Length: 306
Image (cartoon, rainbow, N blue to C red; front, side, top):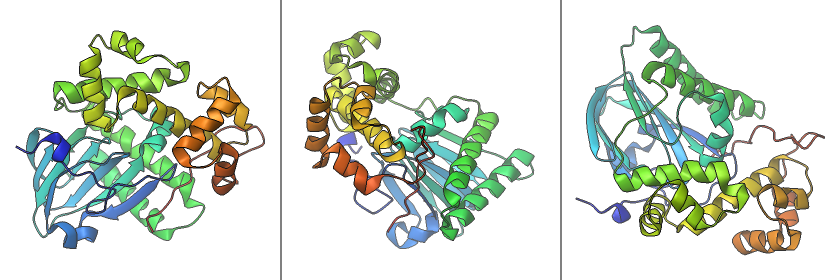
């Protein structure tokens, strides 16, 4: 059996993992990358994004973590970041794959009914009207993405949100209980960090909250996120700072306080150390024109693969 640390991490299948733009979303079909896998997609993970995969033709074998299922179209899965998955399919099989960055999934989470930190696989009958709607929605998402129109960004986010909520309707709000104890603890840590990262808690507070030990929590963080608990916390704060810098016009000092840095100079040093530039300079390169006069967060911009 391949050790988890030896499982490859990809951007999209076959391409090395890389940093994603804030608000990243990408759409393609499985067979767009046929020359990379020829129907055999080996177990892999995506460090910074989740994926919806909608099978509209054919079938095969699907793997998520330690579990394996046979499936035929229609079928749909949601796999969060860092969850190992792969599949084997025939030449006549194809699926629409929607890749969504973790930060965009977090922004969507309050509007969807599906749990976005556990995997899900659903199989159904094409005659079921909900599956018909899913097929239409995924086709709309693919068509809208290919159109590459600036007006499509909000439409895409809305359509993806509806797809995730329909998945919850078909299979319940929960997901598959496939994770090992270490991965399950990592998922619980991600939830806890999302809820409390602004409070600048020490690592020990998360250990107590999750009723575990420092060793087990650090092992889970390294296995699921590739970092220590402390670095995972700092990554989350950096991500939120980037989102606020890009999609609002709030002052840099306010954004620093929002993500847990009372000292503006400390926030600036923290940001520069991890990005190579000061928050104001980073903002000038990334600020979106949609940021309204109130400074409220607007819909994330979607960046196609180049």
